[in-house]
Image: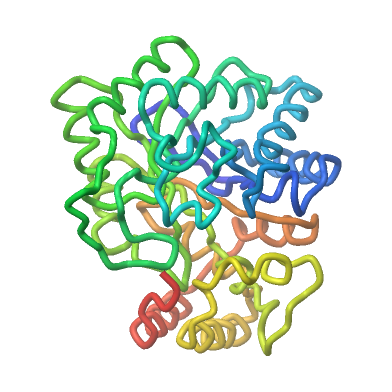
Length: 355
């Protein structure tokens, strides 16, 4: 396993990290324990979760992902060996769908990054995770109306309101000073958002955002436009989520297949970003490249992300041990110059078909 620094901190994060958004929904506690055990055995030291997980969000399971990780940490007694990242939810309508997360602190417009919300959120996460500190505490998505989750265009709303960034940073600073949080980061952010947080941090001597957790895959390389340079120049690296595009980049959904217990079989009606015509065409072309060079499709897809200089870690999700083993093995895969060239050629033909 290889490691990279989280921003300009002293934290060394494994290039592959374990996402836990299926824990408590697609994965039982015992299954999740097995996945975490194997991940650590293979050198993974970063677990990613959120107060709203598992997915698809609902009141009955909200917080289960953190609880399962907390139970595992308590059993293993290895808290100092694991880097935990979790996220606080906000009211962004595109990020929560029709539910508006009504079961989290009132949901809807009440779900802000103000001091009261952030304090309640961190205390809830700490309790569920059975720990007294979070290593990386992230804003799950902006309060502002921005394009994400399949939407790229910016729709200006003169009535749009969000908690001032300086106030948010002050709230996060209080968590750091209290010892509840070590470092802070962003998720589903834009270049404008990242740069403004960093500008205010520098001007006001407030905590810097050390990471950005955004989607990044062969089907969605929009991060490379603007955000990648910010990550490198400002030392705020990408924690890449959805690297296999909900499993589409494993090939398991080819030819209309919907495997039992797969995410698209269970929640396909809720997620449409990977169902585009160009997306399906691109998947076939990437699949051909993997076959041509005798590469596992999933491993090729993950490895392409690993080698990017702006990526701190690739967050993999797995619901079975077989999936986890395949995904982690990507660290031992090499992509030739020819493979990389052909991947980039497909990107030119079908640019970002599933943003």
